[in-house]
Length: 410
Image (cartoon, rainbow, N blue to C red; front, top):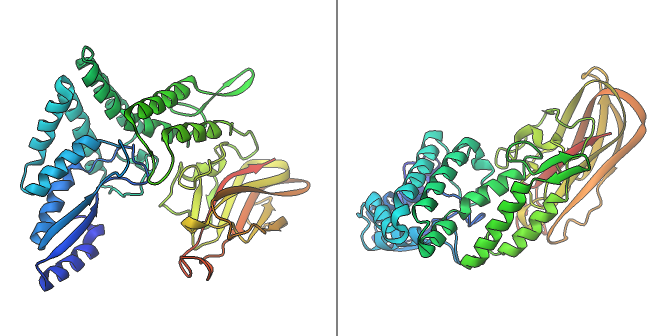
């Protein structure tokens, strides 16, 4: 409870504690946006509960996963149950007791995995959020090199119980979050290590490793009885179906592919995807704004691509996503400009967006500007945001988002 981001909450809670000695605390203790994903919060469960008790909380609702399964579901439930009875219990002793009793000879290796992940998060100085994801964590506790370490620790855990079907199955299920993290991070990489595709003489194909990992993850999750991988929706079978849809979006070769664009208006760090290269990595985003898209909250978008030298351009397109339930709308207008020197731009065309913004669900649209073949070096794409949610919306007056993906220059 010493995180600077929680300062306002602590101040308000302590004010309440001065007024009453009968508080009820409702605390979220998992990552609801990604139920089967690494979420190293085991070290904060005890100090948080201890703090709540000190602030006169006599009732606690520790809300975990309402679905079957989830990251360390059994361990986290055990710890919380023990700590609710006695908030002074030692966290390390609770973890060791459960791991030894539930995973047998695999316990030391799983403990090493837990410690490595928590140490990495603490060393990064980053926080955790209940709506976070493995992609944003790829810069902190889920870095590619750390995933290699974690996999080695699980390899050792599996080897330690290879002769016990029961314990082996438990370790297999405990490893599901690592598979999920790799699958999700792959969505942001078209090619290369950890990427989705490989190029053959026949074109682009999904990497065999991705297909094997996807099937293993889904089959094991179904075997465990996992009901959802995200709060309220997405069964394991649906996850596989949606992933196959992602794999249909093969890399696109175009003039701007692989070129880092420049941003006159920075994109939001809340959804960083793969950074600036998200817009020109040759990979179209899935139907989910949290992955493979860059967003602007209450702001317009203005992005410039330097093609390196003069090129003949006749078409520029960009994809946008709408999810009104998440305050994400289509832009009002898109304009394409070009320049030979990067200073003076001229407008080549634009389009007014007529998408029904009241339409429920998630949708993507591609907007293109066709032009007479023009020799140019710089291409700029502007998108005008409505900036605030409309009066009829549940978030009326709040900041509205626009989310864009691949800028294709042809």
